[in-house]
Image (cartoon, rainbow, N blue to C red; front, side, top):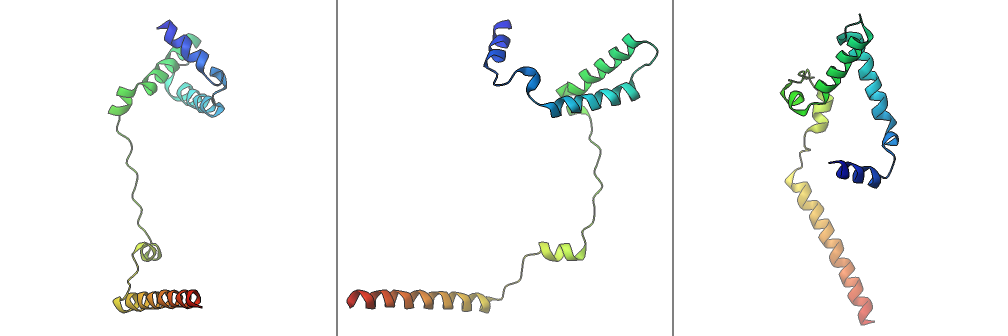
Length: 119
């Protein structure tokens, strides 16, 4: 196990501590929350033990998967938003007219190209 860890550290592009400051800042925020809300504050060792155990709970994938996430309240959409999301209604006549115009313009360009080739 030591050899695989050693290989991972040697093959890392960046040193371990320089991967991301955002992750460190997020951990500092969690530390403050856990220390303030979930730790005993009578002894420093007990406080750190409580915070450490809270970090272990938060990082355990099995325990995290068992926890129910809070339900997000559903918001209703305004009438203008619903109108934008609905598909536009297209008349069949408009579609036929647009395809007739495009096919007519294509044949005219084909004829012009044929006329130029003959001259």
